[in-house]
Length: 391
Ligand code: AMP
Image 1 (tube, rainbow, N blue to C red):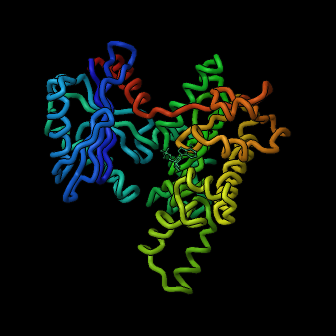
Image 2 (spheres, protein in one colour):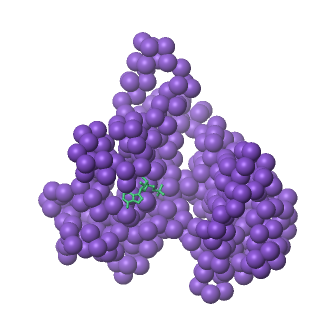
């Protein structure tokens, strides 16, 4: 039994192929990059070669060809299911769904809320529907895990009209990752997820924090779009909305320019010119003031969210560091946890530097370091889905 897990972006497709017979073994992983450009590339298990590839349909054909040539998969008809990551499921989906016309209609309707992501996700779905029409395809939404948020977390203090007619509310993202981290934390803590209170930190180029109460998302830092919340690689995170009004009214900025600044020119990059945390840390250690400021603002924001989420949750079993930065940077974890003993958070310096899984001192709040695995989460849930729905 093989499951093909896909993440279709606007110019790239990432995939992992899982064999479900032997405890979810990854049998192949790969990527097609620069789709639609003059020269594209395809990689299989990290070996990369150049190809010509004009669209998603062509990209999947090349992936199929490569998997066949290497004897990994005869063709797509040998798959048990295809799992697609979809960024925005609006308020409609709170769990994975079998893709049919109604589902693709909703994904299409959500395009204005996630223009780059949902249209690319849909392109991946349409291409695979053509290439493997008889294989069941399942959609996994990044917003789904956060559908459990109560109105006090999901609503903005705006006139009701905007919620009723324009669906302006907080949706939250990175849900597949936060869900995986929640389950993995429960396993490591030896406690049923249903009684776990956690703060999961997905700190990567995109970053978000989630307060999880009794295994469910209670509140998360990303909102209507993935712009809200923590400082990110190139995204601003929380800012005073009055800044946008000021730029629009007093400096003739338009929506396109604001979009570009907030999504691509801000965050770490805006503060010190670099969006890669590894380089930010290197520059900081060489004494560059801007890099130090960017690092400090990034960490302070994470700290503030932890404090706020402890206040919301009351009791917390564990703080969970993940994402490229959370998993790999002892410096960030140390700065975030600094001086938080009053909240029961005490980092074990040695374990932190070693990159252990349990990196806190014995106490009320455990501190965990977990590498997230969204594809595994989707494969796992696909297996469950297949069992439950008998497909
Ligand atoms: P992601 O989006 O989850 O792949 O994470 C990407 C981010 O992780 C980038 O900012 C990288 O610089 C950062 N990252 C990866 N390895 C390290 C490291 N060893 N120390 C600090 N940041 C890292």
